[in-house]
Length: 287
Image 1 (spheres, helix red, strand yellow):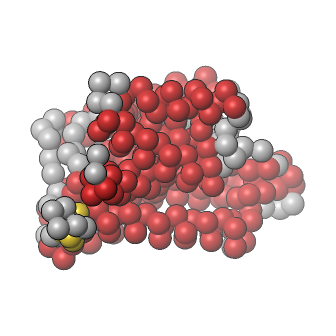
Image 2 (spheres, rainbow, N blue to C red; image 1 turned 90 degrees about the vertical axis):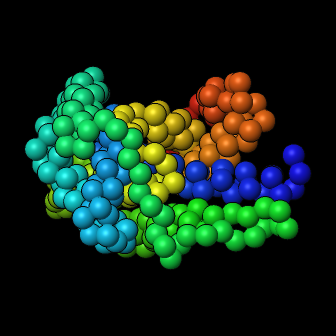
Image 3 (cartoon, one colour; image 1 turned 180 degrees about the vertical axis):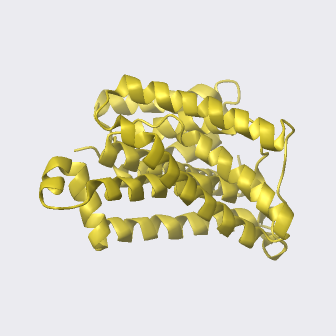
């Protein structure tokens, strides 16, 4: 592998890892703060991609379609938390698994009913079309660089919100001791609604951003959910920093494995997870 191909694969791995982080951050935040094991989280990624296709078709603007998709996803997250998830707070993880698996079937059925089972696609925005030259022979799509930069901006924003705002302080406190936070007069139900809605919106945003570079197909959320669980386990359950580092690791390892070891690439990230768990059973950044 020469340097140009190595550089292209490295950029692909980083971009894929950052997309994984957007999805996994919501998953680990919901579990860390609320104690909810949401197996339907991958469906939000699928919903985001389909909403991006739908709104882009009707507005002829990817930016407007993305904003509308994010708003609808946030509202959907709030409705789901208020009507379904709130009933799970005092239930065990088995009940959570059963309900959220049922939600996967419901979302898949609604997707099939509303948009059919054909593969769909969203055009790359004209402003971000084209490529930049990396070497004399190799070019790289501008939109993929935009995806990586946008994900970094969203990751930095999430870091600032968690570590520099009163809302973030309450989220961190709720993650450490939710009973104590409630005793101090904080509306814990409102906090849970905000966290769940934000988690759904982050997963949907990942679907929106990836729509122009990936096929929009039924069931696309299940595959990415499994990979995101690998990210969350490697990084440590409930750790945003761990999710960021683990997502980059998984993205880069998976991308290079697909090129160097195509026959066994599907198992490489699981081998990585097994090795890390042998060294640190609680994950890289779990307390």
